Length: 401
Image (tube, rainbow, N blue to C red; front, top):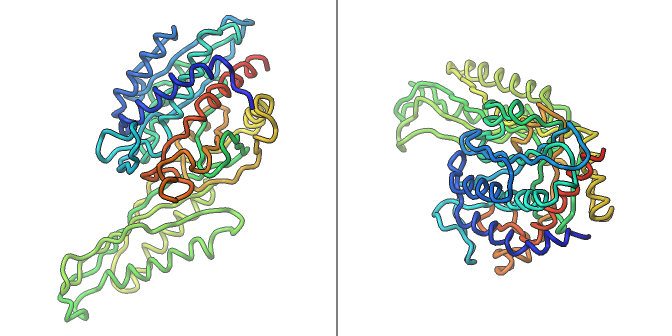
């Protein structure tokens, strides 16, 4: 595996940037400090900078001086942190209580900055245009990608293709992982309200107990996955919240259930929603109660385009060796709003192995690999020159193709 010498020499600068972002995490649509840092760096390197797209998004535009090309390429990094505490004790740990970069967006942003810095100095390597897209609000269903698209991202900055990288703990450091077609699931949430007739717990016969009914609804919902779904088509229906009652001796009037549904296809999602609607509406009526389902479709599935996925994998093979490339990585039921980009233009989303935990605070306690969204997580700084080099190589190959 060989990274670019010039990017290697900038390793210390990249680490400093990444750790500064990590120490100052900002939540969805609040990434003002991070956006300013990104914009300032891009301007200093001579890029054309546009701010405020999707509220706190930044787009850096770089025109190559190589062989003339009308093509344009989009490269995306997410910037937001998570509303969770950090337990790490190292010097660059979060300085803001209840917020941390627990998913590595600080590293994603820095890798893309490293590529922008290098390409700004070497515009002769490509013709056409590279749009460096620094996106807010990927986490928590806020859909910063959708916000940028709705505010004219691809009209203002046309792209013939778009690519994104996410670090992946548990995979060997520097391992590039690809999969054409569905890679990550859709993310959808739902609320169910079961309404009965409340009353005294000592006289349940005078009311209609929504808790007992909701227990049957919970059981019936499991059949949506176990008996209604094609077993070869992955899907998850999880009930994550049950809210009811305020006193020991009072049967409440209603019960609220909440949860999530994950699928890789819209057809399966449609079926699950329809089955849930039927169960929630009809089952409570057997007992004289009512049920209401509200279903929210959040992020679509991440579906990589075959041609672009094959191209991105070939770039990784040529730059880092076939032994560091997996073209059939496993699907994940987690979601990503990169899916909105892929619904608009061709592209691919890939994973870059973040290692097995030896660089993290968690390993000091014998906890082994630290996963995403864990309070002991930290991005592996060894990936910074790797990711930046990969972006440079992908840009070169894209405009030669």
